[in-house]
Image 1: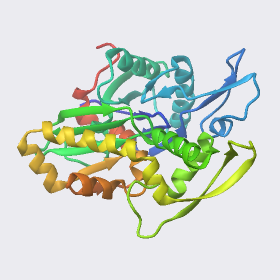
Image 2: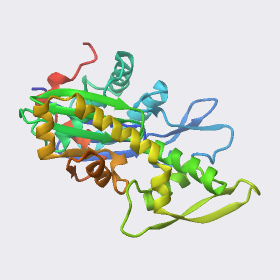
Image 3: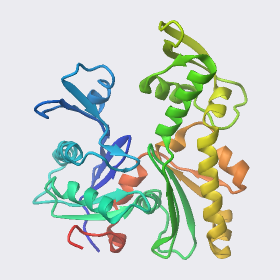
Length: 333
C-alpha cells in the first residue's frame, strides 16, 4: 500500500484536487492567462476563463489540456504548481507529497509520461498514474476487489472513458474524444446553421447548462441564446427550446452510445450479467446534462447509477487509491 497525499484529476475543462483528510480543495477551470511576450502568468482558473475572447493582443488565454492530455506542457506545469500550492496550504503536509494523477484510458506512453512529469515538477516525492474510469470507480465507492464487474462511463469535457472494473483492475477500457466541450461546439454549429446566430464558447456553455438535453423532457424548457446575427452582425437574444438541444447533440450522444454498446459486446457474459444487474455508473461533468441517464437506459437497456458530485469522483478516487496503486506507475518506472 502507498500513502497518497494528493489526488489530481487533470481535466480538459477543470483541474480537481483531492487532499487527504480534507476532500476536494481545488476545482478550477484548466485555463491560464499570460503575457504574450514575457509569458508571465496573469491569472488561472475562473479569473482566466472570464478573460477568454476578451483580451488585448498582448495577453494570451489558453486551455493547456486538450482531450484529456497535455497540449501545452509549460503552461500546464505552471498552472499545476499554483493549484498544488493552493491545495497544500489547506492542509499542512510535511515533506514532499505523494501524488496520484489520472489520465484517460488508452493514452500513449509519451502522454502518460508528460502528465507524470508535470505533476512531479510541482514538488512531489512520488507520482503515480491511474486510468480515469478506474479512479472514478474507486471514488464512487465501488468494491474494486470484488469479482463482480462494474461499468463506468466517465464523460469529461474532452473525452469519454468507458471501463469495466473487477478483481482489483480494469478488465476492459476504451476512450473516445467526445465530451462536454463537444456538446458546446455542437450547439454553436446548430445555432449557426438553423438560426443564423453565432454564439461564443461561453454563451454555448451557458445555454447547455440552462436547457441542455439529450433526452426529451416532460415539458420543453426555454433558454436564451445570446450571440451575434450572421446577416447584420448585430447582437441578438433568441429563445431556444430544450428539444432543439437534443437535435444539436445527436451525433455526439450517438458516438457515446455506440462506444458503450461495443464495450458490452466485447465483454464476457459473466461481466455483462453483473452490469445488467447492478447498472452502469455515470461519472464526469458531462454526465450532468439532462437526460444522459435516461438515454443510456432507453437505448442500451441497462439501469444507470447516478452518483453525487460526478465531476469530483475521479480526483477523490485518485486521492484514496492507497490499496490499488499497484495499477499506477511512478515517474521512474
